[in-house]
Length: 435
Image 1: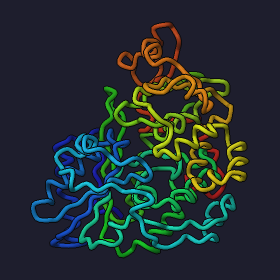
Image 2: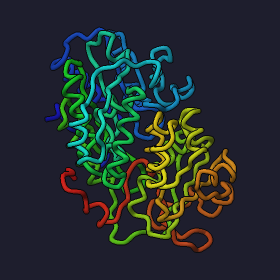
Image 3: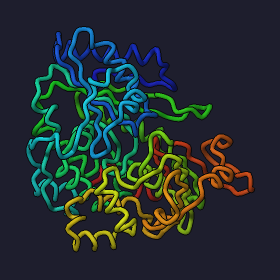
Image 4: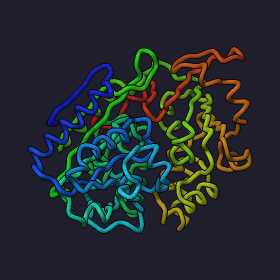
């Protein structure tokens, strides 16, 4: 069970500081009474709206006077933060205390989730082992206390972020990320979304049990929801060192972050914030989180003023431009035939996740990519200025809106913070999935 839980309609900022102090106090009594070296593992800037960066800053404020405190944003294969991004995300934490994870250069081998376990967990959809490579600073340096801070929200690979996602994606190496993501894609994104224990989550739980049992770590799990006045506020803080800490937070997220509809929606408009979403690798969360509610033949419009590339790394960007978002069958055919996709299997998984399978139209209104670039990866293109006039985000609230032109659309200002689905798609799950 969690060490403690705070749940309310809105957790005030002053109360969050008290909860961080309580978390540190509990850790001292349960893990290490006088920690000297502390590692903080928050999400990266693509979760800036979660407030996890401010919580990390508070933890640093509490601990740094008596401890040697370091921070590793759990980047996975995302681009390292600039100093400016570190300040935006983590406030007054000194930049030299924040260390960049690199999925190839800063990892060491830890173990393997064997193929037999993967095969059983995925029902045969994946039949390969998942090598476990993790950040070398995490695994090789001595730590008295490790604090994972994460936003629990519906997720396309693990059903719900967070918990040990911080390790096995956020601080993982290339072989782990690639083998994991293609396995999850083979299980089907719409089977994963909103599921408490996906096949890949079961594999990560196994890896944590087998290889990370000796870490002096615990989790701070954040749940957020929309308030009555349409603000994204903190509604749950779960603190503990076990799987139940995640599970209870995910159940609350399932209650608060999934909107269920009886009928599919023909037109959805989303906004991906300029300071968080600069690649389709992360901006495609607008597709992931709405695809289960989209009507056949409908249109998803994504307003992305910060969009300037497709992949987070140059080589992944190149693959997305080369192959495009062309649907599961075509991507898997390309994957079997092309060594570059096999080498970067997580990119193949991403191409699957980002396709509508031809079922609905995806239209991007990007800030920095041309029509030719957008259409070249199989998306529709819309001019950003014209789209902002047609669907002004500052004049719409989440839910049904009538645009200035008289069109009825469903508007989602922060799609990465939830999941939208029809009742049929959410509750018709494959046997064996813990929903």
